[in-house]
Amino acid sequence: MKFEETYLNDNILDALYDMHFEECTPIQAGCIPEILDYRDVIGIAQTGTGKTAAYLLPILSMLDDGGYPQDAINCIIMAPTRELAQQIDQAMQGFGYYLEGISSVAVYGGNDGTRYDQEMKSLRLGADVVIATPGRLLSHIRMGNVDLSRVSFFVLDEADRMLDMGFSDDIMQIVKGLPADRQTIMFSATMPDKIQALAKTILTDPVEVRIAVSKPAEKIHQMAYICHEPQKLGIIKHLFKGNKLQRVILFSGKKDKVKEVGRQLSMMGVNCCQMHSDLTQQERDEVMLQFKAGKKDVLVATDIVARGIDIDDIQMVINYDVPRDCEDYVHRIGRTARADRDGEAITLVNEADMYAFGQIEKFIEKTVEKIPLPEELGEGPEYTPERHGSPRGKGRGRGRKGKYGGKRRNNKRGNNSKRDSNGKKKVSGKKEKNKE
Image 1 (cartoon, rainbow, N blue to C red):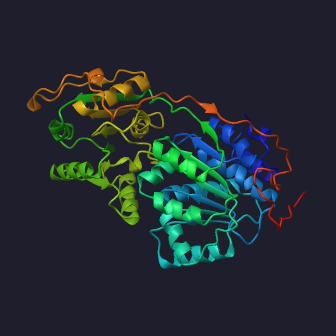
Image 2: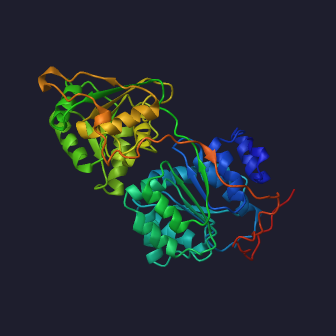
């Protein structure tokens, strides 16, 4: 589908033309028409599929068409990290190039008092679009800087990541201040039970647009060590022997393992840094800055950075443990072999994780190469995933079928300023469009 085939208004289409965007990605083709029809939407898509444009374009188009108050916050976009909030804000500037009178502000932590004062002023004046991290927005709400009573659009971007970072209570506190007749849009890379529960709580009769997770890039050389849990640190020491590895991300699902491996690597003289939930936002920003700049060779991290890292020169990804589901495995190893480069991905598989890794192999439709353990570590267990099924592995690795859910209602260009009969009221104070 081409963007000009949608009902996006001319100002948005002109900006897309200047940016040489013509064809919608699948997530955009599925979401844009439904959002323009005032439907609540759940978008299931991984990073890099164009999901930011999938919600920003229709929202900006509707705001520009009018029917929304000029002195109110009309759209709240929640992002889990400062980095993602900045990326969304940059996209907002590009897509909104030809929009007059549509204001926005990015609200996130880790700034000085001057930045906070600027945020406060924009929020009190009623910026049309507010892009915020949960903690920072709550801070402004508690200080009385934010009026959420007239918000028309509420967007949760990377909702699964926000819940993983412990923002569930913050999100629900923010939702309590929103009007019931808002339009809610939620994007997530995966759909675990906790995301389904959140969707049932904050969305109304949502349309689901699901884009299948792509398989790992062919240029990733995938390997695995079948080992006992106590042998894992020995494998890590073997891999980093001689301190030759650079541009490496090592993932673990547990922060205590991240800390332990980070300490061991530091003792070996490996130039590494750690990323986990015990760090403040300012500390996380500094870690990412050092790693991106090449000042650190190895990043040891939890899944907090499995998605959303825009670094093209990662040479190797190491999974210290098997990810919690198949899609997380794809996200993790997808950090390497980017921009048409080669890359390696090594996973350490103990007996408890054999079933889960077997499910991953089925999901990616590939038998991962098994590497013999270093001789000094002795023998590892036999790889028998079919005999190690467990509740932890139950239900993992189901294939994702791409589909566009829901039936689209009739929508006419020029009617975006009106509310339909499904609970969306028309707001007074319509903005006048400049027609040429």
